[in-house]
Image 1: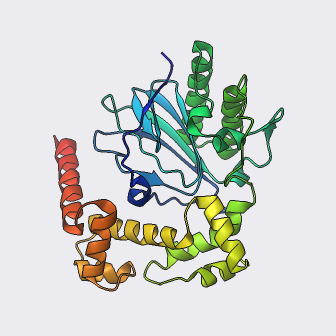
Image 2: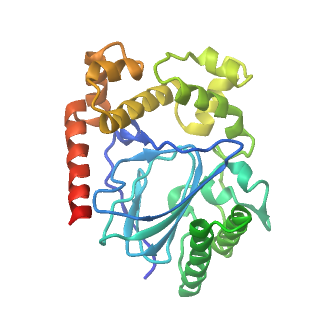
Image 3: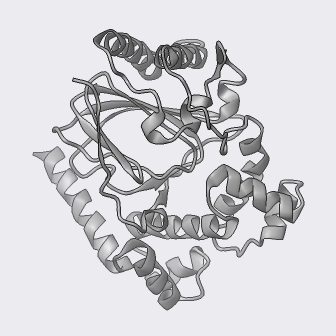
Length: 310
């Protein structure tokens, strides 16, 4: 059965609730890969990240949600997600297995499939992107998925080159018979745009406690302030100030889970004026207090440990 479009159930304020998923991406390391066996409490948060994402369901079923569209994805289905595009994927079967590849545009370069750029497949609205729609396509996707899984898990010599070729073959399979909308507008997918703002992203990630101004970020990227604002919004769909706040909140959330430090210390680490400021901002964006968030995730970790011991 083909993947099915559904009405997404993300709330209206989903962009504010999206958490930045930290990835080790840079011009020197433009590729991130993983094969994941998902658990019932995994990946329920709305996420954003800086790379393009290709995912393949190798086993079981998941629901992949964007703002206005949700898809039931089964074994052999693929999802495509653009940079800084909020999404989440709750489970529908116990412990499905998915292959995830996230990459910066320079990893695939200027490759084209006839008149179609690989970037076109990500640049269209979700409902218009290519999806697996025939048994033959599903078989091809599964075969490519298993090849990619072997390269990613075993990492033989030149495995990254093999992954790149496998990704292009996969996108070629998806592109055959697919036509981009006539009104397609390239949003943030120009191959040179994301690397141009990467220094600002690195600056924020490296200095969560600092109040980095737009002018400082623009200077780091060797851009005028006006040019930086325009390019940053085009690449991320949000202002630099909103991104900076997202990251500081995401950093605080990670520290709540990974440390026992008091809230006032975490507030200072994440660049908030005090514990009260962090508390109110956290509640506004995440819908719960920092203490509730810490307790919830601590309980999940305890349950995981008990399951492992059992």
